[in-house]
Length: 237
Image 1: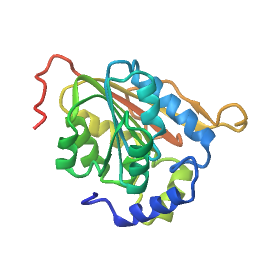
Image 2: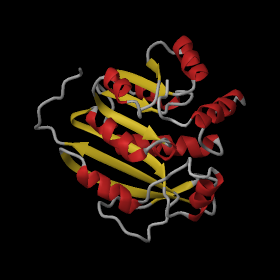
Image 3: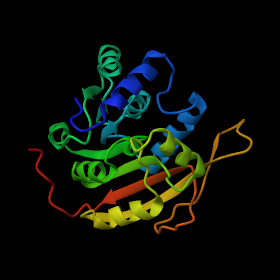
């Protein structure tokens, strides 16, 4: 289980899970559904890829990856009840209990062509976590992140509510970290903003960009980072 993840998050999400909502991180299933679609669009082709879903919750995205003919899918979460239920109901996916802040746990998972980190970085030490996950991306692989934007006024209220346990990055901080990652081939990010009329879809997305700006205040940030393919494949040990 989690070595450095604040224990209060385990308790918090256990209660959310026990409430039997279809989602764990969003206000409704409509928001969750569009978010998963945006993540899949950023990932590109799924078929034949080894995929890791970090913070998989009830496993909906992991199951979508399996349905899209991924070669292998691993779903990871801190909620034991959720992972155990997924193991029983969906044995075609490998389900693991743990946190990406634990480097040994990350190494035990292996290497992946595609990695999804949806609504997680704000709950952990996001710099350390992103670096650790990047080490597990295979050459030519990609990581897709969706995370709240610290510059957004709504997100700032959530940060204050959780009093230092919820630490979201902003575009400038993410840009600085990506610049320090080894073997980056290319990367870009886009914003997700709530629409006034949400009857069709809740979010409108901005164009992809690869330079930060201090005035970006989108509610969520979508980041896709591609690893160079012409490098030696790291050891799984």
